[in-house]
Image (cartoon, rainbow, N blue to C red):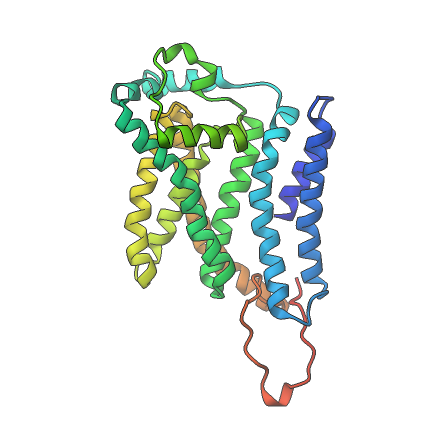
Length: 315
């Protein structure tokens, strides 16, 4: 996470002059400083007197880094990648699918279907929050939080980096002539358009993180389906994920290759996250280091160690 935010800050600082460069550099530098500061404060034991506060600071720094990097993209992407590869992505769709899936989907556009898919497109944010907040700030199981965090970091750090390598605006903007009829207005579609206008990164299409993130969550929940929470969560997550992926096409935000890349990224992240925490835990034990994810709830020390100092894990 630290390397990711530092790399983004370096990319915007090294970019050519642009009207948004100063603002993007200021925001990205501030974000990098906040993430590095949280990690440094925890690792150096500056809040060791309160294990709960130390764990909360560390976890908030990681979550904030992933979340903050997306909101900075609105200014950062035009600076680092002022060009657009929409034509190349569209050509890929024609070569692979024989047409543009977003155009095919227009046969199913009605006021009701637009509202349905707008609701699910927005539900992406609720789905992420529904997993991230309870796990990041309520779970101490190293296996659960380690797997979840590894997968989410892979999805969003890789995805947002590729946004800068393969920038584009999406079919609705780059090929508006393919969609002569506007999408019907409605409560949920209007809310979606306001949300995108206010906070969307605008050049964030390949891969589709609206697809990759939910796909990872669906696989993650399915892997833990023997747990009571996951037994209920995985089929709901899978249903929501399928509708979100379709919504990216029906609502004209993404090309077909964006969605395919999103599915691939989500599955790859889930596969990597399934093995990374155990391997990292073994490595850290061999070094004598503490857990990567500090527990929020710390058991009281044994009687013979009372009075010992609380130390932040090394590594």
